[in-house]
Length: 387
Ligand code: PLP
Picture 1 (cartoon, helix red, strand yellow):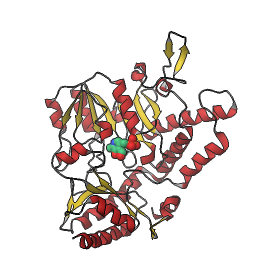
Picture 2 (tube, rainbow, N blue to C red):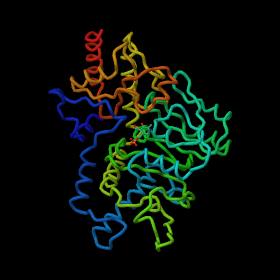
Picture 3 (cartoon, protein in one colour):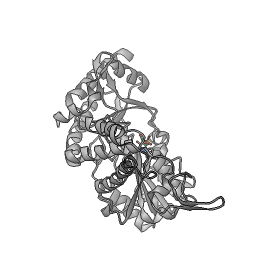
Picture 4 (cartoon, rainbow, N blue to C red):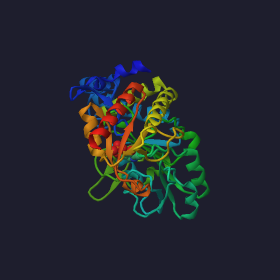
């Protein structure tokens, strides 16, 4: 796996004179050369306005979007008979679109959500988590609702909620399922044919793809819903008093899309597929376990959530005595180590777990155990400095 590291130009950057150690993969992943090349190639050789023109460049750009939809479905083992792929600008927009399509329905969601899967839901009831951050799915039985909006993986604790378990309980209660997969898309094998969730959202930039491209995979029958954004490309016919919207993905994609971004997403999907999610998970679990082991030896360090690698994405959030996470983040940055500090856009979860802001380190398969060792060496210095 070590060779893959060379695919990422960003990793050879110096930060404050030190070689970059990138532990903020849960926020956004660096891009491999293959993705950067695909985006550049699109602009250099193919870029036309997709879905509108009839000239070669326009048709080539349209083909990128078609290919992109096919690749996303293949990656998620989803059938084109059952699902459609809508391109948005990120997970947040995908979840807002799902909330718009399901407007008026009562929603059950969880305290574990990122704000992006919490704020869009208006009429909601909230289920809790255990002190380890595991979502109390059985609490759903005590709530009334029509939609179940749940994160597949928490961006604070890394806790993964089994899609099969979510869907099983949702079926029992006749709930429409909306899954926020922002944190799992780069780490977990997903099979939508088996799980058959209704809506599934993620961002390309958390999967080694470009910023500005999100995906909403949804069951085909929701194509009759009202579009969220109105304008060019979404319509079949417009008169001064009427409008006939398309009955395909474009209904929800008014305006010129980010075709170069989709070209990059296509390359990212190919890249991840070529390595294999199983191999990726194996390496990332090793890194996660190494980090947990080291973390457990520091008395002042308090891990938020579970202390094991079971059903978890490769991230660890923690507090370090009374040192403010932003001070830790600044100190680590001065040593070339990029991490995240704060509430991670998940304030209700921090409140439920009775913790203030946290430091979060998140790994990718390209990271090395030695980098984790360096992190802990610097954290030690940090403890002495701020004590
Ligand atoms: N959901 C979760 C669980 C996340 O971790 C994030 C981003 O960190 C989002 C949603 C929002 O993703 P984006 O900023 O790409 O819209």
